[in-house]
Length: 299
Ligand SMILES: [Zn+2]
Image (cartoon, rainbow, N blue to C red):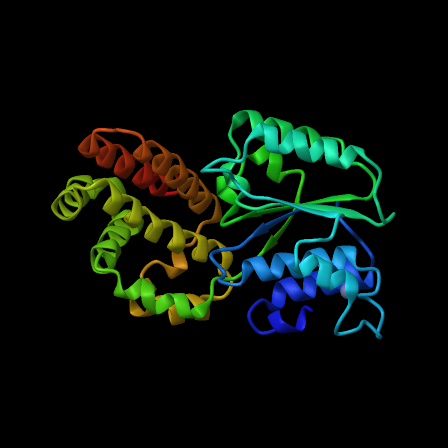
């Protein structure tokens, strides 16, 4: 079950083995931060099986376990999965969930619900889910899945146990192929090393290259990936150097967790603004000011 993730997600596997399997210490809500891990869906289902299949900790767990097969086919009544409809998880979907959970468990076992793309909750649905999380019911376990935790409201985060996955190493070459990659490093170095003094310089760099909304969004993804890596691999500089090469040398010793979290929040906020109709040049100015100010706070 978990073995298949031994190499790609050793931390996750260890955490689950120690807390859930060995110590039977089950949280009432998990938030899985996928960091674009390519097999995150399979991994989430594996976790659901561990939580739901009573045979799993048994050495004789059969290859062809009936319960696990039902889960794989999305046919197990005690597992409910929810995905966004259109681009949002609607309040109605959560009310339906709530009603289903009110009825008695069919098998007498635990029940699990999974919220994929948990960052796609709007304000009303986020409040609905918050109420569930605030008043957990015995035997009901929530698994929220999101690409990164900074997309999820803090009030929700604080009620979940967070399990973080690692980016796959093979995504890295794609990153380097990005045509914006060199400009990106130029800008990052300016932001991290020189801060606001070089505002005008950064504006020039940016104006020159991207005056299109999609390109800017794509560009923000690069920022986000880097800052998430800096946060997650703060103590693993070898990983960072392996992934980003020479480029990261200048900033790798300047990692400041508070500053990075501030920047990740700025990126999320600005991404949302960018999705609406904004004046792109004004938006770029505003983004640069906010993101370089993060560097200044800690100077
Ligand atoms: Zn099973």
